[in-house]
Length: 440
Image: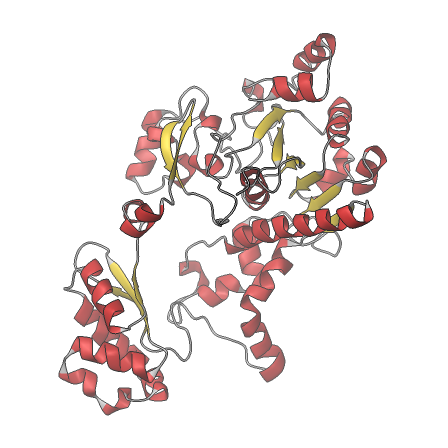
């Protein structure tokens, strides 16, 4: 059994923002890569550490009471003195990483970055292409200092084309690919559909996979290369059946909501309690017979429901009747009863239910980390397990500039005079200066 993680010895320069890029480097860090986040102090990166505004505890509590706590998800609902180190959005994907502060948009910042790249294996960025162009961080420029460098670029719409420099968050990519429309409900419109950031998650996973392939190729050829991962294009195969339905049959798929043609019944059905639900998805006649036996009521014997086409045609009435049947039942008892009968079903768990889930608890999925400023909490654990390579979360989410000493002094060998100059220029530090607020 190996105690060494598979990516030990690989150093990654992380110039990422928001979720897709940081999630990619999270996966690399979890399996042993030394990931060094490069973050500016002079400008606050949007939707990354959620430090764009200074909030008071009273403001946070008020926003949470109004159901708008997502942007104010600080540990213990307290922003503290340095809220950028206490936000759940950033801390969820920042474990096992190192961090340095550096403004790469300046001449001296670019010089420091190149010195770091010269000692690294991988560079990951998911910024708007024109931002990286202005910084002078092209693959060609990095190759001059390290011909073996692997560079992953993850713009929303690619490095060329008319949408090249369009700024985008997850919602925009979901809309441009058609996913947001498909998730809409048949009796509503897209404005009624909640946010989904599936493209970000898909981009992070595929980005890490692409890096593994490029490193494998470098081992064989000795050459690095640039990887382009357009996040919107990366997601399109996830809804490939709907695209092919149009290209092959000329059929433009309609909004699906919870429907999965020709599955019926299929959806989320209310249970006893406030906003408690169970999901049921029937595909075969055998599954329907098992569900019908569980229902045990006369209406379920209607001959219209005997066949899959009949159930699909009658799906609205069928869903309404099943919702009436489930409404008075305890969700977990119903879930176990349906599963025991061979009916595909599952409880819709919210976050408290997931943390209390006996299955996840028995598997030890959540792992505890102690953050020096955010406290001790349970974090979602590793998404894969190796039989011969034991692994666990090792380090708390990195604080802003936490590893400046290691990077500047030990790794890059900067003199005290050089470090003092970079401090004076505002590159090195562990806090955002007051003038950073309100700037992008």
